[in-house]
Figure 1 (cartoon, protein in one colour):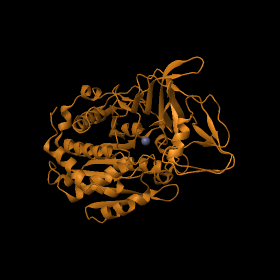
Figure 2: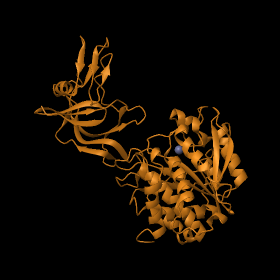
Figure 3: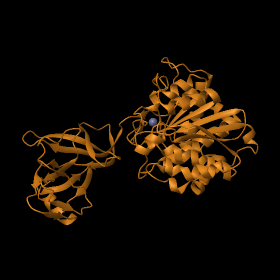
Figure 4: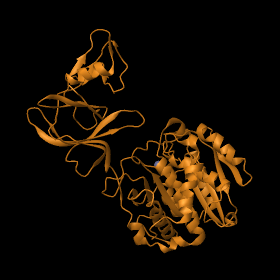
Length: 447
Ligand SMILES: [Zn+2]
């Protein structure tokens, strides 16, 4: 394997930096976000635009094709409506292929390959920010039943195009790690099985070789942040069923990176990976990789990370014990939840706090009895006095706090340090309250 990315890979990465669609640097993408961009792309004489049909709610699902060659590649994105990262990436990649001359591509590459892209297969789910479509169906479990129009469209495309290589592009939750490391799996790959016995035919071997090459290439950019997704056969899923058609099928999951809420790192890595695949298919260089190279990619480990981890905290008032606490923050609702309490030494936190010497204080409400306004200063004072939330039965509390505030209409149970509960609590030592965990965020209090 190369010690450094070769010229063509360095070039595509630089070209991405210069040419990616800046307006798509968002946490979520809906149909209206991509409309002006696909209109721009469609205006090119090199792009063939095909209306494939409509979503359940009538939004158009369109295929964009570049090239007229015999090697057929098909990529689709956002079949889960809340997984937008690769939608931006494929639109970036089409833009780059149309408007630059990437290093390493033969001049006549469009006579050798046809690249078909279906961005945002589930526009209704995208609109709602849901995984499922407007029928409530997970399109990626509809490969056999075909009750969703989006699933039927994808199924028809696979039959019609019989792709040599299929790219199934998704997002995964931010808590996967690359193996047992504390690194987020910014990208995870899978060559899905097409049978429960996980046979490897020529097409699946090629998918695994391509993945080994993509992983090796991406490792120059995101070292040790790449995972290999579990290959348990999934009877109802598209990837597994498409793999059975003889297409070399590649699942790419975009994941988290540190300080990267819009997943721009994964977005760029999708472009680099797609470009590596195109170049190596044209030159057959993926064949230098073996199955062993594929299996050397560390496992994509579920729940290896949490948003906040507090280690060695003392809990229990009359019967003290020590435990670690993990907390996640839901990106959609903005609400935190305690995910686990106990020995969490195998779990890492995006934010990791050693709580040695700190005890969880008893939950104490501040009961609002008359109109009251709260700002950060006043709030901090009340937190330092041991109040961790407010009971406001008559809607008398207003606030301009930048810190998260928990307001309830009735007192909550004393037993609230349990998995599933929201993470609002105070930490103390013999000198009093030292810190607050507010919606999972650590806040130091200076009494
Ligand atoms: Zn998905």
